[in-house]
Length: 250
Image (cartoon, rainbow, N blue to C red; front, side, top):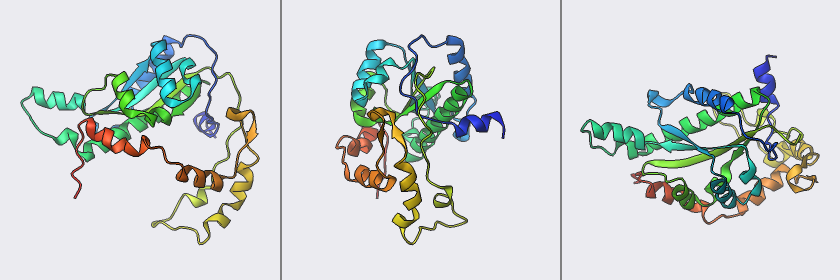
C-alpha cells in the first residue's frame, strides 16, 4: 500500500488544533494543489476564501454553533463561482443567463467539492489535521453577506486545517457492499438487518465532541437526523436563487 492511500485510510475529523500561525509556505503549496484540481470543461468556476480575520472567524463559528471553528489556524470556504466567468463573457459583449443555469451551478458545486477534497488529501499527506465544515449552511444568507459574495456565487463547504491537538479514533464506516453496486442500484431486502453488524460496531466508537460518550447506533442516528428539521437549511435553494441562479422548474 502506498503512502497516499495510507493517509487516506487514516482520515479523521480534527476539531482541536495546536494554536500557532499557519505556515504561509504550506498554504501556498495547498493552493497549488487546489489550482491543479480537475474542473468541468476547464472553466475553473469555483473559488476559495481564506478567513484570516479573527473576528470574522468568530462570526462564522457562531453561524456554525461550533466555537472551536474560531480557533482553526487555516479556515477556507470553498464557493461556487460563476460570477467570474459571467464577467468574462460580459466583457466580450455576451449577455446571457447561461452562467446562472443549474448546469453551471452544479458544475461549479462539483468543482468546489473536488478542490476541497484535493486540498484535504494534500494537507493530510503533510500530517496536518483537517475538518470539513458543512454547518456554514446554518445561516447561508448571513454567511453570503459576511463574505461579501456577489451574484452567481454560493458557499459550498468550509475546511479547517492545522497541526492536530487531539488523536480521535478512526470512525467506523459502513461496509462498501452496501454502497457499491454492479450496473444497477440494488437495495437490501431488510435495510435494518443488513446494518446490524455496523450498528454494533458504531456503538463501540467514542465521540470526543461529547466527553467521550459512546455513539448511538448508525440507524438510530440516521432516523434522528432525518426527523430533525432545520428551517434555515430547508430554505437553501431560496438562497441559491437569491444569489442569481435560475432553476427553470416545470
